[in-house]
Length: 258
Image (cartoon, rainbow, N blue to C red):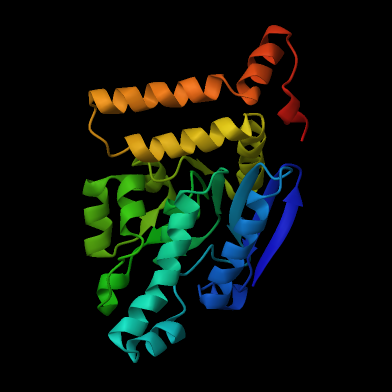
């Protein structure tokens, strides 16, 4: 249900339930989590791309699974929902960059997967939608990532109306970083992968962690001290020494050869 494809320093995870528009179920979520665990330990993997086979990126949760969940006890239903919440948090805090390659519909939980990634590249034909309220549900687990990715004001519109968001508009409001013709989608994703692979892996991990902290934080003396500490730790490490030395010697750093 999820395929792994290696392209140089990038690992592409393909959602592969095209007959069901890559709808999410326990097997798909566990497969993504399993690959993320394995790839985190792999030094040759510098970037992870999330993509979908078939006509859709991801149509959201499997409705048959949701119907079963509606019959569960509240405690069991909460535990069931917790699996997806943990996956999204894992993606959001993942130390390696995550790139969403969106070629078609990314609805409900599928839009949540996109929001939990670091970079979003969408084909012009891609569409996003949060239809939960139309069927009496709430986009609960994905809401923190939606608000961070598009801002609270835009999130209010699309969560409450359930209307579709085209790729060009998603790019205009900042939800998608790039909107490109479908013919150039893979090439643009690969360009991003090459850029990310050229950076220091520890620097990327530290930067992601720092952005998560400062994104919603008030600017205070304590925050200033924290940021100074992050830089002090980074520049005394071997990776920074190699990066600075390679720059002065006008050569590529050691990690760029992976």
